[in-house]
Image 1 (tube, one colour):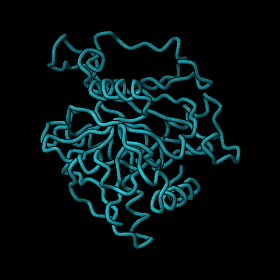
Image 2 (tube, helix red, strand yellow):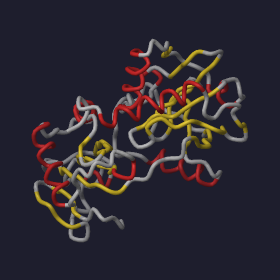
Image 3 (cartoon, one colour):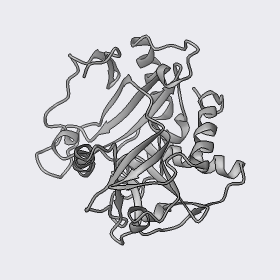
Length: 295
């Protein structure tokens, strides 16, 4: 991985990316036994740490993994930023932002699904970040999210489905793939939530659909409440999206922030940057300097 940020925090030590070592028998390597959070830092300050930490705790609970304290992680983040010379410069745009990942794995274990007795591995890493385009093409895929599965609501490192879906998206010159759940309802993207506008009303799938509770989704819902924008958290058939029955749509995620959808498969949306999308893009950018969310 080529990055100007070449130091990783691994189990309490700062090491270069070239010298960082993890056992090939780590359960995260052999069976994907791990959880993670992707965060963003604006101008040297981590964004929405408390919300990300709550979700990390929940993911660790679901997968029965130990979760380090918030104090441990905050201290590690400071050390990581210092080692990588990432400090505030006054640039709060995406050009001054960094991608930060916290990963917890199950530790060294026997080959197979059963976890061993080794301690977890805790890894913090960071890389540069570039701004996403205001809108993008997405595709839908033929396999589904399981809204009743054991890992519902868990941000796990078992991302095989997402890898396949993004390969399909790349082949179609799209940047994201959208899943239905087993009932055929609109669910989520590989790493984002989705909002759609139909008949002038804003909808997003409820958590019961199997979608992950995105941090940006949460913040956008808060923005909508503050602006008196009604959002219906209701199930919609995936066909609402694929058959051009919606007026506009957008994706939300930590790294995309709020990104409009311009095309779904071969269907062009009439308004790739409609009223709701543009308003929420503008409002979300304001959060980059919100002291309540930084640090």
